[in-house]
Amino acid sequence: MTSSTAEEYDVIVVGAGPTGENVAERTVAAGLRTVIVEAELVGGECSYWACMPSKALLRPAAALTDARSVAGSREAVGGGRLDAAAVLARRDSFTSHWKDDGQVQWLRDTGIELVRGHGRLAGVRTVTVEAEDGTERVLTARHAVAVCTGSRPLLPAGVPGLAEAHPWTNREATGSPAVPGRLAVVGGGVVGTEMATAWRALGAEVVLLVRGEALLPRMEPFAGELVTEGLREAGVDLRFSAVVTAVERAGATGPVTLTLSGDERLTADEVLYATGRAPRTADIGLEQVGLRPGDWLEVDDSCTVLGVDGEWLYAAGDVNHRALLTHQGKYQARITGAAIAARAQGRALDTSRWGAHSASADLAGAPQVVFTQPEVAAVGLTLAAAERLGLRVKAVDHEIGAVAGASLYADGYRGRARVVYDLDREVIVGACLVGPAVAELLHSATVAVVGEVPIDRLWHAVPSYPTISEVWLRLLEDCRG
Image 1: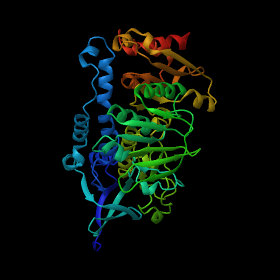
Image 2 (image 1 turned 180 degrees about the horizontal axis):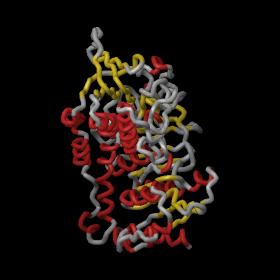
Image 3 (image 1 turned 45 degrees about the vertical axis):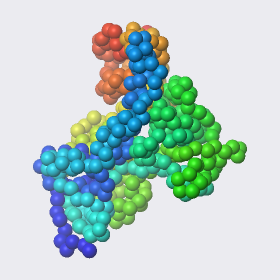
Image 4 (image 1 turned 90 degrees about the vertical axis):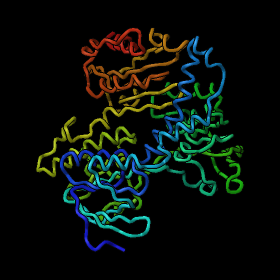
């Protein structure tokens, strides 16, 4: 049953994850009546199945490792294991036990209206919403529709028995109510390495299967090498050049048997596939506006969708494939909200590089942290990427453990820092740091890269002594050298 009349708003946002919430917050703040459409939990993937629960699982292990890395506290904590039940209970609290009451209240307090159901584009500035009971509402927008539907796990095609084995994806891996006895993880990227770290620390026997020859292949090579050492020291069975050719589960909940190339067989209680993401666009009505269902949405720097006339359709967050990171999605949302408001008010957009309506940081300085042991933090270009772009660069490396602050932070601190230095412009275009607590050093690197701060000015940004950030002084000395 469809509503007989369309409900009119200034802006319709499809998807109430962090990106959609931020778009709506910005347009409401600009005085535009905004409705947000969500079929699942308000707060989205990050709040319930990704960033928050995964980091809640990882933090206790990091805290215990930190305590054991310093004489005095090492003796206090002894050789005990994590209390898995307490860790899982804390994880549950960070997901609000998979209830979105608090997020819904935030929408109300902010002045954002909510329609629950599956939203589909139905034409120019028109969205239909199908509720769980099958009823349908028609929403129209005076100014804009923003698609913020995110991404979903991508399982590889052509692996016999995989679908029938009901493998874990990130959702099951971050939300499991119990520690599996044996866990096989397929994939050597961020999700694979983080979940191998977390579940091994909680007591599972973990085997990590990597098709290629290195972990974290999009980062500097030393990042994957140091994480490999950390995982193996923790007891993870790490195998490279491992290709799964078939999967079989005994019964509905029995063990899973993986057949690897070479006919080797491996048995686990659960198997996690962390092999990529695909856009959630297969059933959102793209065909109604001349786009192909299931595709990533191509956008310009203002997050306006290309290939659709009228500059009314926007796509922000994972769905546009610019940078599949929650913080970058929220950044794009701020740009999108500002662009929608400007056009609604009849103002021209400033889409110059670093303009108010240009998501330039997606390409120049998207930061990322991998919460393994050791942590990996990176922003901007790797050395290889800079060289592919034809830049005249050099890599400047330093052992983080050689600075006083690091040696105080942990006995025998191991870590490495690299900046990629543009010799012609005399600015840093990339940075990668590996070691305990380096996540908190990343924003300084991001400011340097995104701000394109000249090296002669950075020289006057004095790091406090004795902190780990003193590694910046050593790096800058080598850049100037």
